[in-house]
Image (cartoon, protein in one colour):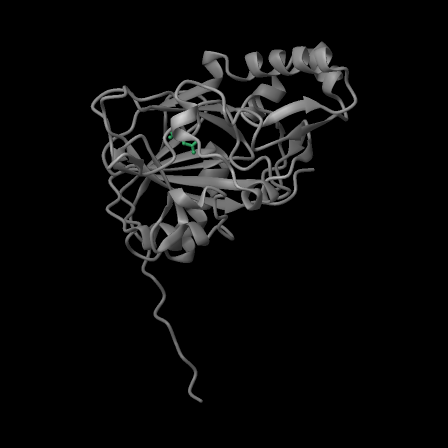
Amino acid sequence: MPAVSFAPSPAQTFEIRPLQGLVGAEIIGLDLTRALSDEDFARVHRAHLDHHVVVFRDQRITPQQQIEFSRRFGVLQIHVLKQFLLAGHPEILIVSNIVENGQPVGLGDAGKYWHSDLSYKELPSLGSMLHAQELPSEGGDTLFADMHRAYDTLPAHLRSAIEGRSAVHSYTARYSEGKNAASWRPTLTAEQLAQVVTVTHPVVRTHPENGRKALFVSEGFTTHIVDLPADESRDLLAQLYAHSVQPDNVYRHQWQPHDMVFWDNRSLIHLAAGTPEHLRRKLFRTTIQGDAPF
Ligand code: SIN
């Protein structure tokens, strides 16, 4: 049989421009509707590791193109809330506050607490991509906190308090909490609950690609620190959270039309700052599986 040969994708001309502040870079001029050459992919991969969150401006990609680009980084994870997956594209979770015919079209209050995506899994997410479909005229920002820097700047007494410790993560930790949770959060079926049993991860993890340590706890999914009395665990976690999300450790992303934002869940936690109820917001999320934290 004759060998099939594929023409290599031509390199594109694009710029990687660090954002003001500690984390984040904009990628300008790259067209994600085209397959990336290995060289371009390597530049994007490097930028993602160095800046932790990269913002691809003005991407007119289809859901399938978002899925294909995401797959270049690893296996995609399917969200447990099947009712909010995009029809025909279960790799995409719809994040939206829109209600049509009395039904929410997506997960309306996704990210209302600081979290790292899917930290409640044995294999939490490497990174997530969020592509803007419909944006509100005000609000709707996404905030990112640098958990490497949070670890590096930890006061000595907190660093020694977490030395060698593990914490439990649960999808249902805050599932029913928060304003309007009852209307946005469907009751989980037994099958769904079986997919989100609690897991234990180190409080400090080492990033498998950049080798840096990062705090790996969040108010969204961490329930407690193992082997500590409940009140001590609560108090310690509260101090870690307060330290992690100090304003100088946070990048606030103000969405522009057709932005695609790709963040590293091993380096950052994130928060959806909220959208005024009368305004519409819709984004498509893909979530890439990472490895077991160590
Ligand atoms: C998420 O936590 O994945 C959603 C973030 C957002 O809607 O800004």
